[in-house]
View (spheres, rainbow, N blue to C red):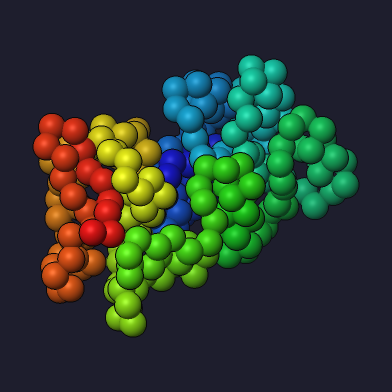
Length: 223
């Protein structure tokens, strides 16, 4: 799942990006308003995290422009001041939620997940294929009674496939949705991650949840 982070404070942007990537998100970063508009026009993001204080176009203007263009991506606005006027302007320009700096990373993450759920970019709750269970809120995976430890990217990959049971998902689609612009993601990289995932969720259990459709991509099945 891909997120656009718009933050001109580079140390904060780097820290937020690292944290979100550890959760399995692909994160593109823009440091000014004009770049944010370009990124938002190039890819359908699951959500935007948008700072108010930006060089060039501020966050309010970016948000208003996106809404004028018909972009309905959920937006979490980061305000520099805990003031009523900023909160009102954030919502009036089209933001879905706001968070005042300084903020807790845990709170930002929970707000972001809630926005994505409401925006319909993912199916909330527990995903099941046969006896394989993926709890998106609790970030846990198990087959039967056996807990399975997944990396953030493995979790995101499995969730993306399980949200589309029986549907063939191409490698290009996985690259577009699970890796950011800066990553040198290729079909081979997708194959490496799918192989690692299979070794955890399928091989020890004699299962074949993720199947390869030659020349097309992958799909999940309970058979």
